[in-house]
Amino acid sequence: LVHGELRKWSGDTSPVVSTISSTEKYAPTTLGSVPDMGEPEAMEALDAALAAYDKGQGLWPTMKVKDRIECMESFVKKMEEKREEVVKLLMWEIGKSKPDSYKEFDRTVEYIYDTIEDYKQLDRDSAKFQKHDSVYAHIRRGPLGVVLCLGPYNYPLNETFALLIPAIIMGNTTIFKPAKHGVLLITPLLEAFQSSFPKGVVNILFGRGRAVAAPIMKTGKVDVLALIGNSVSANALQDQHPKSNRLRLVLGLEAKNPAIVLPDAELDLTINECISGTLSFNGQRCTALKVVYVHDEVKDKFLKRFAEKVDGLKFGNPWDDGVNLTPLPEPDKPAYIQELLDDALTKGAKIVNKKGGKHFDNYIWPAVLYPVTKDMRVYQEEQFGPIIPVLSFQDIEEPLDDMAESNYGQQVSLFGKDVYTLSPLIDSLANLVCRVNLNSSCQRGPDVYPFTGRKDSAQSTLSVHDALRSFSIRTFVAFKDN
Ligand code: G3H
Image (cartoon, rainbow, N blue to C red; front, side, top):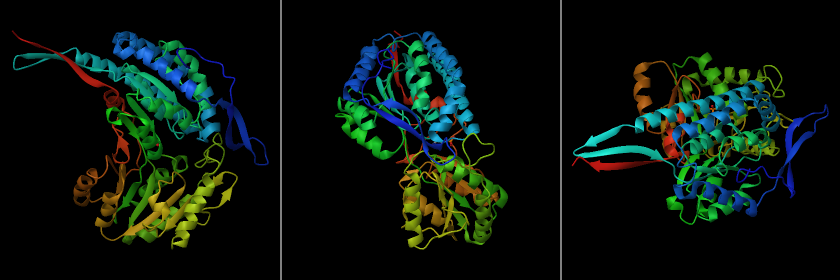
């Protein structure tokens, strides 16, 4: 989708392959193909976005708020009509379970409606004048320019739109490239984008990041890099920009969220929350619990019951009833997970659960590893998969020190009961991460809450409310009371 036109493609394509088998004997399924676009298409998309922005004088950045809202409402209504088609592709392309696929779609629609409401409120607020000393001011929020937006494979709809929708509604023009997995599911929405927004406001490219995103960054004409994914890609793109100090960064990156289990934690609840926290969508969430610290006093009980529960989970295809674990969408992921397991086993960890690490097709059974030490790759790498590294501690300073040393700082889960222990601990933890979850697993939602992180985990804040601010700048008109 470039310059308001849905272009036909006659160049090279890449197959989109699902790791889910459609035959009884396991074989990956080819779902379709996507264009391998390159620099020429990237430059056309950039030109379209620049022309639509027209140095802030274009139709879109100067459009009346109510008209922009009408465009967004038209888009979301058309999107809702594509629910079944998109959900089916979510299941096939990334292996997300049926309930979670519907949830991702519905949550995204809700995000768009909430964004529209928040935008109306922002507009009402900016209609007010302020007066300090003898100076009146009319303060409002204006767009930043051209936004390059890249989404992740684990939430190809929700997280991508958490970037794209606020960027668009604030009057920016955009170029969007979907992730490698979860790419076909954007195609049912192309017509809705095309018919709802003026030409050049939303431009959508397919292809590899280095083929399309890198040349766009090199021109130095992008004002905002909006990316949810990994810091290697974010840094590489940022480095391409000749004036990267001028670039606004809206980034959601890696995390290593820990769970801390205190001696008085309610074990059933803790185990259930740690199961969903570590293994929802096979651990492929930046908000997943990636390491569990258990106090020595409860370690044995915790490990035994946790391991049994993990072995009782159900594998299946995304559309099967009651499945907890589904195929990993990246074909090479089981081999990577195996490498991490081998490394940990060589360095002294054991797989605690009976089924842990067993492979078949593109499934790998979750492995509970104990004792994990800091020299192991599974401790150091984000992993994004179904390994649960467990460490025990005697003194709470041990997990706190590890968190302080970590390169990441998104969230933590704290399990315990005694309010006099919890209260000061919550204060300490809040200075190390951005969200402390008390007796519950880490998560991003509800999407109206701030979603961000310290250190290498994020730049800027994404929530319905904050994202409108992340994709805009305050401007004002001032005059004197003469
Ligand atoms: O990958 C990170 C996602 O934002 C996680 O969202 O906590 O709702 O699964 P979630």
